[in-house]
Image (tube, rainbow, N blue to C red; front, side, top):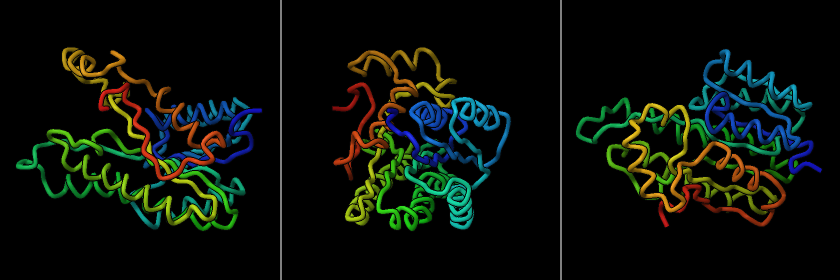
Length: 248
């Protein structure tokens, strides 16, 4: 039997990168997939078709994860379309990197709203359904930057550190109803976000990684699969670093 047979998973920011990788792996493991993005395009359409070809339900939704109202509306619609929600992956996120002395208030607010407030919005919206069914797994995508900080990323680091505190609090609040909440802290993962980095910069990063390679979306997706499945039924409130041993 597949690990997520018959489960329904919601993934924000699911059309590309880590979100896309998680959606495909979950579908391979028998989950029905609802994924969101700010706007639907050829990427979301192609992913929806790939998911459907695996013999499970799949649907893309246009939704602004940083909007409380939009998040509530999309979760209500997914519940109506799929009949239940077993897994939520709060994956939506952006960067607006700059030194604090040059960072604008708008760039600070935007990163906090999309990266952190979105987790509040979606979790708040989905909890009423998970509470009623007395089960669920919530997975928040944080970052090693949220654990250690990073030069020129004070807004991003603050948003990801906030998500860790949010994760641990929700695990305590919802645990008695058999709802688990965990976080994944990816390290240097090869995605569209890192694709434009200079090769020399990548090489310097790799020197700091004990496994001597960058991570892949599959590495993060496999971690998410563990946390979404019953294999981790006694794991909650944890932050799992997926960074090749970069920060021990």
